[in-house]
Length: 135
Image (cartoon, rainbow, N blue to C red; front, side):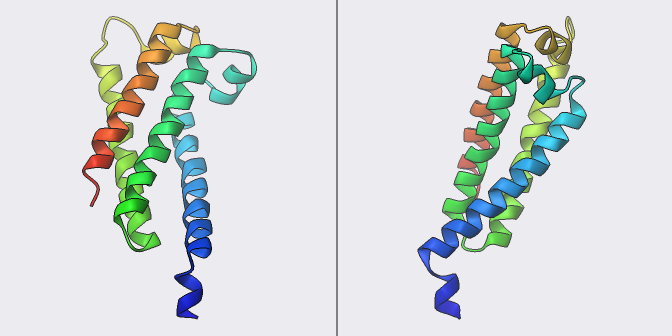
């Protein structure tokens, strides 16, 4: 049975499944902390929300990429992925805090693409910084 769990195809399917489930949970958390409904805004064509959400998805996936690469077990992978997500979430709140002259969520909901793009770049950039420190 040990060789079954060490099979590359089984490991890939297991990692994939864990990451997809974590991604769903993490995106639900982001849905809670934002003042707008991501999927309704995307459905209505809001490009800024689409860019911000895409950046979050990429950021989470990138963090898990590093976590899978540097860890031997799914539990370790999940642990580092969760920790990385929490750091990404903190980055989101710092971004909001550092822009006191306007509200990030309000601007993104209003389809301010410049703010949506910066949000995307922050998520992607932080995911590389977070990922590079995963052991």
